[in-house]
Image (cartoon, rainbow, N blue to C red; front, top):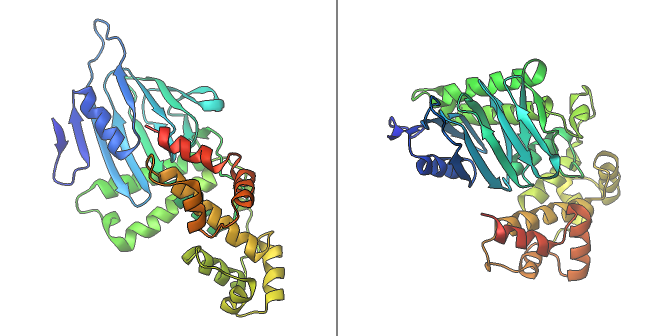
Length: 332
C-alpha cells in the first residue's frame, strides 16, 4: 500500500522488503525477516507512523507478525518503548533483554544490535536521538565538556517516574507533529520541543552524569568561559591561543585559565583540543570508503604531529583513529 496521506508520515505495507526500506531510511539499515508463520498466526502487515523533529525521529511502529531484525552498529541512540507486546533484543557486550510496556530499552550507538523477536502484537514507540545533538545538550547543561562518552543503562523504567513522564511527553510531541496542522511543525515551536525531549531523556535515563544534572543550584558556567567555549565551538579549526581566547572572553589570560580549571576541569587549550578531536571522530565515522585518510582529517582540524594526535585520540576514545575509519568503511 505504501505511504498514506500528503505529509509522508504514515506507511502501510504487507511487503517485508518495503518495510525494511522504510525503517532503513528513517531509523537504521537493517535485515528483517518474518518468523515462521504457524497456522492461525497473524500475517505480516506493517503499520508505521513516523515524524522527523530535528535530531530526533519519533514513530509508532508495528509489523502484525513476529519478525527478526539485525542492524550492526546503530550510530545514534535509540529508545524503544513498547505500547503493547514485547521485544527480545541483544546489543554487543550489553547482553540481551526483553522490553515491555513496563520497561523500555535505550540502545547505544555502538555495538552490533539485533531484535531476536519483535512480537506481532508489539506496537512500539521508537525514538532515534542524534548522538552529537545529545552530547552538545549534555555539555550545555553541565556547563563543561562531559569528559567521557555518554553511555546509558540499557533499561528504562517506563511504568512510572521520569521514564513514564518522558515517554508521555515524547508521544504528545509526536502526535502534534504527525497532525497536518500541528503547531509542533512551526520553527518557533520545534526548536524548544527538541530541546525539551533531549533534556528529558538526560534526566529520565540512567547514565554517569544523571546525578549531577538532577542536583539543583549548581553553579552556572561563568560568562568568560561561555564566551571562549562558544568561540571554539563556532570555529574549532581556528588556530586559537590562550591570549586570543582571553581577549574574546574579555578577561586576562590568567583569569581565563583559572576559570576553565575551576568549571571545566581543564585548560582552555585542552578544551580546544577536545573539541577538535570530537570533530575528527565525527568526520572519520561519516567517511565513505576511500574518501579520506586519517592524516588528512587530522591536519584539517589542526593536528600537525601524527604521533601525538594518535595518542590523544586513543586516550579519549579507546581506539586508534584508523580503527574508527575502518569501522566506518565496514558499516552497512
